[in-house]
Image (cartoon, rainbow over all chains, first blue to last red; front, side, top):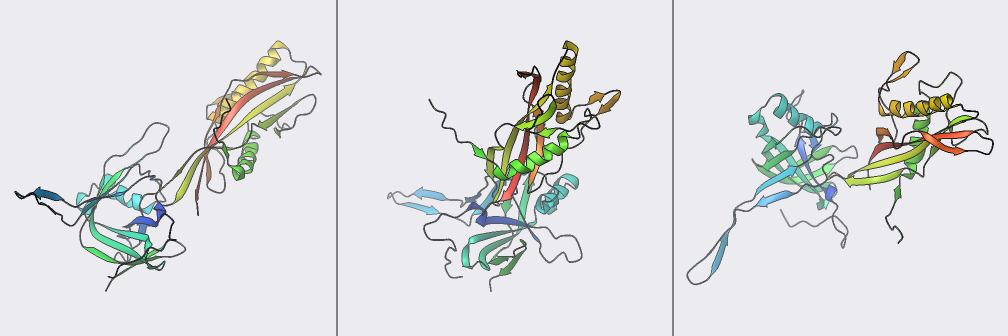
Length: 179
Length: 168
């Protein structure tokens, strides 16, 4: 894939909502293989991907420093993540984690990261799909008079497929893998 | 030294909250059949009215990572009960009427006659707004004695609500 350009105006910073992670939430129903992508992070005010490159530096006896790196392990925390019956992503994770305690399924979640600020056009935005992400709820509760939250940690993993995504006016996401 | 703290108003929310509060206040079980709570209007000799105190103020605003904005706002107002020729016992009744209104709006159970009443839910709002709490900010007290010897008893109440929308 050739280098991409940003779709945003030169000189302007990129709005945070142009980087969105989506969870594949259509594992049930008549056609479970057709992805329905639901955004993760409603009401989450601050969340970033953390990239661990397994960096290792050493200096030889001649004083030359060399550094090795590996493909990054990407993790991301969504905290707090408030329960909302209209949020398909949190509903799916709640069912897997709290109702079923299905740790195998939680470790194999399909997540799509859409970089809405980069790509050839707004109908072909850069996206990366991780087919076996580990999603780990780290709590469930909240203070009196408040709301129930379920913060999660995601470790992106499994097969990585890059491609392009488009988002309809109704918010439906379509992902196309690069050839 | 002047207070330079910025105050941001939820201008559109003011009308929505006012309308909803007027409907809610007029459902107060202690109102008699023909009684109405008016908006910012009292006759010379008697009446009950709601007076907004300023506007609907945005207390907090946060944006989520998906681009949705959640504002926490408050709408303070006074409920005023005007009456004349009040005896000591009648003054006590007026004060109880206002205090019970505050308790009822908070969701506490009040008793009118022999019947207990509890407000189950706040009215639905439009345009992404939702009532969170309505609480007393003071106890009912004598606020003013007018030139015709009528008395204005008042209680301060604050409605808190959230407003969620997607900002461009």
